[in-house]
Each structure stands twice: as C-alpha cells, then as structure tokens.
Length: 464
Ligand code: BGP
Image (cartoon, rainbow, N blue to C red; front, side, top):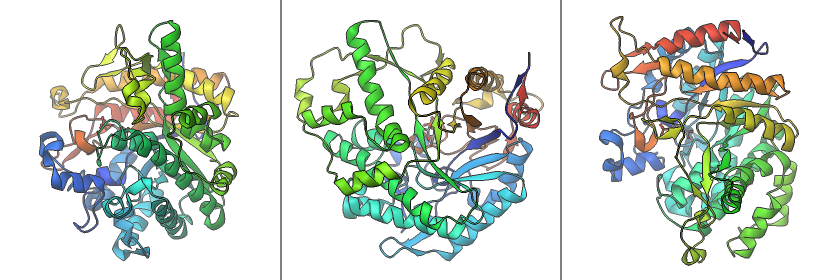
C-alpha cells in the first residue's frame, strides 16, 4: 500500500550555521571555536570548525544540491557571532547581513522554504567569560536583542523561526555531563541555565510578536524529545522514567507550549533546594508567550532505570541522575556506529503525547537521522554512496509518522538531519548524516543514493 502524506508537507532537512559555514574571525568565537583553539584534542581527528562544509563560500552550489535532493524546506541558523560585531551595543556586521540575505534569497529562488533558528548551541564565548553565559539574565537580554535584530533584518522574507535548538543539550552538555564547553558539573547552574534558556525563548517570542513583518510569520522552538520507557516494569524503573520525562522533556515542552513549568518538577527542585531564581514578572512573560508550533528532534528513546547505587552524596550538588539512569541497552536494536537504539515507533508515541497533553499543537519532525561512520565503505562503482540503511531508517520512521497522522496528529513535515554531511561539535566528521556526501579534504560534494530516494518522496509526497 502507498502511504499518502498531506499536501504541502515539508520534506526537508536541518543543519546549522556553526556546523556548515566555516569560521568567521578569531575575535568572534563561539564556545566551540574557543574549545577547539584551546583543546584541539577534544575533537575527532583534531578537525575543528574552521572550514566545516564551507557553506559560506559554497552556498550557491550547496543549495543547488539540496534542490536536486528534492528538499522543499531547510532549517539552518544565523550565527550570533557572525551577525553581531559588538556584542554589547548590538551593531551588525554588514558583510554578514549581505551573506544571510544572499542565502535566504537563494533558498527562496530555488523553491526552498528557509526555516531560521537563532541559537544552535553556539553562544559567543565572550559572553561566557564576561557574564557566565546562560547562567546570567544579562545574556538573556543580549540574546533577545540579537533575536530582534534578526526579525528586523530578515522577517520580510523568512516566515518560519525557531528560538533555540535542543536547549536541554546546552544544559546537559555544558553543566552536567561534560560534552560541551564549559564542561562543568554543577546541578545548581544547570537548573538556572535551563530556566534562563526558557525565559530567553519566551522573551524572543514576545519581541517577534512586536516586530515580525511576514503575514504568515510563525515562531517555535526545537526540542529533543526523548521518550523515556521504563527498562523494566518494576516500580522503581517506572519512577525513574517518570522523573526523566519531567526533567528532559516536560521542562521545556510544558513551558513552551502551555506557558508553565511542570508543578511536580518545580516541587522537586524546591525540595532539593536547587530551584532557579525567577520573578513573578518573568513567569508571566513565560505564561503569555507560548510557541506557534514545535519542532521535535528524535533520534532514539531512553530505557530509564532506577539508579543502582545510593547517591545521597549527590544531593548537595544536585544532579538529575540521582533519580534515573539512562540507559538499559539489553535487547534493543542499535545503530552500532553511533551507539543509539533504533526504535521508530517512538515517533508515534511522541505524536500521541502531543495530541493528548499539548492541545494537538502543530509540529514537525525537525531532526531525525542516521549517523554512520566511514561511509566511504559504501561507495559503489558508480561513484555513489549506496546508503540503503539510511533509506530504510527514513522509511521506518515515516511509517509510524504516517500512522500518527492517520490518527489525527497535527504534523506538517519531516526534516532529516542533515542535507549535507556536516561538522558536528566534538564528533566533527565522525558520524555522517547527509543525503549529500562531503569530502572534508577537498570539499567535494555528491548526492548519495538516499538523495534520489528523498527526491521521489518529496515529489510524490507518498511512500511505497
Ligand atoms: C543533534 C544536534 C545536531 C547534530 C546531531 C547529530 O542533537 O541538534 O546539531 O549534532 O544531533 O549529532 P552527532 O553528529 O554528534 O552524532
């Protein structure tokens, strides 16, 4: 049977400025540029973000390739460090304005809807050193000024905006589990950073409502929703899954869609004496400025289990993993290169959750994808990478997405991570996700087999 998706469905892909453009100026470093300068050994094969996939210079060719892969919409991000010259006064860099104008025009000319994100982990490092980064409300204000500048400059042509990509990764990577700079372990700071990121998103939405120029203008947030299934049916594992869901998913989801943080989580944080500093006025801003739509990034679920050892000592320096451990890998299907479980049905569960608990708000899959290392292994004689596993992965996920839409999910699109293989934080070029391959030595790019599959998918908006 053929699965027919709605007309006007977004068939696209997502990436980000810092992962594609290549670096700007040494004086305008984000936290990854800085990390690379200080600790190149943190990065896979010592390859940093200097060139990335050279989008700054190659964007016309890259957008032509994206069109050839059938993409009708693409998410990327505007880099704060590129656009703003003086972080305090907010003066813009005119070359950067010309660049982003040219990119937006090129997308539109090629029939590709540009979806623009304002923050993809890439905090200007100067704001971290000067103010403590997202711990500081001053940084929230500076981010909102940057967002407003973007709406001012580009919302005449860009209708679809995103405030943050995966804010929970900023919290967990930077302040709990040490996979993003500043690499610290501090539960108190983590909690404040989470709150401030939400406040920044809500304030940017408030600014958007004032200055947007597009008649169809919409703004949302992109969240990495990780369904938490208890590893066993035991009560303690169920409690662990419940807490993991509160912390990882519902914190941003409830605040962004329903305007309030989950009461139960706030109670736990209050009891543990790690509750964030907030004001009535700020909470009112959060209440009033909810999103128009959601982007959901889904890669893999968690199999949550209760912590196996007593972790009372962690209570002082609060860590959420005193309540749960992710992840029990027994008996699950894995993407071995990435170490992530493959469980497409989770997309159906996510859709149900949005339908039942979030007023069936409009949403799209803003990232889903299969990271594979050493993809040259699959280079065939015809000179193309035959990534059959990626095609299967996409099909399986679309199967469950289709079922969800059939049962009433308000889902309007599917974006693969990524259009073109790109630089990825400390993983650099280890995991390849693109429909289009890149040779990072020569910057040569070529369609993979999956690009032809995707083109057909997009053309017919249906799947066999
Ligand atoms: C998501 C991020 C992306 C990208 C992707 C793949 O969490 O939004 O920026 O990095 O994960 O990650 P990786 O390349 O590390 O496998």
